[in-house]
Image (cartoon, rainbow, N blue to C red; front, side, top):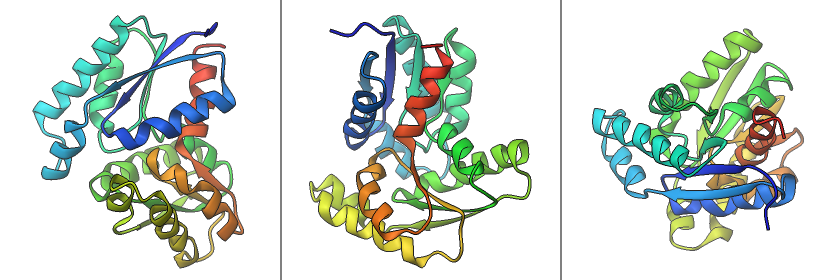
Length: 220
């Protein structure tokens, strides 16, 4: 039975759930992670060129619901909703963490030349904007290059994690010189071992970094 604080996890796709629960199990087993899933969010976001007012409202409402569960902190696990998650953070009285916030901070500690492998194209623009914001704050000279592992997400949603991992790891060799690599999404962290085997630089994942940061945020 959990003896630690309840942490609400808000998901827009089922494939994000297992990686973050595994990260909690390994890095903070005393916590009580609880999952809230609305998988229509990813579907609707993929259809839109930007975050619509309706999607924005739904993200804020989900944060309110998560807070009502008694959560001491809220972690969003989908990287395509950055501005809406920021609004959600202003709407509830507990810490709210964006999915890649902690990973960006850790990556910027490794150097100025950073790479990121994504599998969900609609998330890239908001993630790159957030990275630029973090870089201005922590390491103004940092630059990010992003590669999209085409078809990897489709393979994962079809239940073929092996193909997903292979397609993501293949992108490791396509970067020029970098100081560290990041796996853009919680779901992408399934390929972490394969990417670390293929890379000669540190490879970071969102779930591990997020668990470390949310634990500090609640003082546990």
